[in-house]
Length: 267
Image (cartoon, rainbow, N blue to C red; front, side):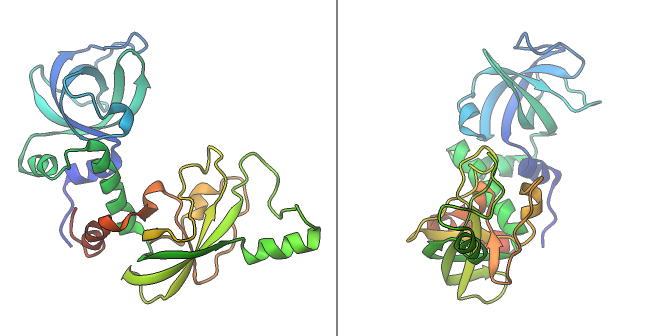
């Protein structure tokens, strides 16, 4: 497997990646951000990947908080790997790191789709595919309540649930996936994906599956512990998985990219 460059590692962690030119040291574009040795003003020259809220910032000057100890110079052009910080009349972001424009970062820039939002989603999909235990292409044949929930409701009476009543209750359901192709993780003709039907703030980003839905499913066995904080995690049977990250379900047109990811290539 090829060695991952520092730029690629940073890109996998960052939400907003852009090429920019340093305009001012010890500066800020937002009054809410106190000026310090680590705050600089940067003109966004080119957006590489970004969430929708900041995808149109090319040509704008924004505030960047550098990592502790990092230094740059006025006029320097760098690729910044950042996460969101403050949004107001302008934008302030925190840099995870920045790299000179070199062959590796030029390849990163050249390989990005024209749509930076799509670029972010695609990179997230590649990362999730590399971490998944099972990756399959297929379709949802049915959606149902978990067997344990059905038994609990039968015992407790109609309208009752086995889940602790709370605003963050996930309201678990199961999607049965008929598998057309296994890309990673061994043989499977049918798998079950446990997913939260709730649209609560803790769960609203998790994919919500529907009968007839087709695509690529990036499935996990050890994902629940990261999401079920303060709750009892449901036990998963051998054929059961979760897909809780928004990038864990991809449309079929992303199949070639996912295949490259699971084979150790790069998107």
